[in-house]
Image (cartoon, rainbow, N blue to C red; front, top):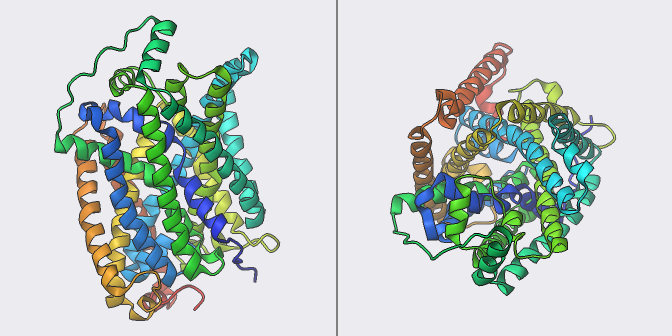
Length: 489
């Protein structure tokens, strides 16, 4: 019977985490935060840095658990063997749902970036065509299914596609960093006056408020979601006890450093009060803000870098969600046929196909709803809960499953307790702030609150779990025994 093969090395694993993190997070979130949290003012960069703290704690927990349980479907496997099968499934189910929808959202958002590149190159016909609704939807769906096909053809092709695009993304992003530190706000003020006849004005007061700061940090926490994709590929990593924790740590550190350089460079040129004012009335991004002070050719380069960053999300996130489904099927929570591995390419092709279908629904939902931020909010809620459970799993694994706990090689037991406790406290705080901000928002209907939609998804996951567990027990399956060990043992 065909099985997954360990073909991903350290570079491919690290690229998976990096590419699942970079995208809208770096080009949009640090600037559009002024719309969601207008009072944040001059404190965007400190809030961005603070948002990295819970992500780093979760990354250390992921790395430790991955070293002991290097199998496909990482986060689901960690919680189901450390806490309970139920918690492992419903938490990963909401994560899978949120990420699958967001894949569609990202594919839908990429097309306007391609349109802007065509506009900058003065390709009027192409730009007009890319603005057509059916072309936008069709191109978004085509990108999803292209990367489904690439993922299905095997991890070697996947890595050969992803790694060069990652290096190109960093090279084009570096243009923003260099230009941002070579220019300053006086250059921007002169450029905006010449182009728009607009005077930027002086910096307004920006009072400090802890609640505002924490609300902005909770929102920007979304920028650090994605490194968990490395753990989901645990069943295909070479030398997994070493490479999985190292790849997770490298991904979070490299991305965190690049985020800080990139966002600091943009705010070094563009005054925060101008960004805050523009964010209230229009969607803004780093390429759009810097277009005023850069030559047209350089503007095209950074737009291309932004588009590549978004495109890179797709193959990495498809790998992540498909391995979750594969792991559920291995444990009998999903039909066994979903865990079928392609005899030639050694990939879970049926899980990838199902992931492509759900992502396609995300494209259609973004198009017909006219607003894609709800999908992102659902994903953030799901991932905060998931990260919280990973820290709890790190604490509880030695008590529930000492044999597996002995396999943790990346953290000493004393450090495991410290990381687990800190992670639980910090992530619980971030989750409470995020939920409070969501439920206190003024929206047209209850289903525009991501918290209620997430709870609805959790209820659906609970129903699926209950039905599958009942069916398995009727067939004489010892549920507790199955979840006391790893798949294949």
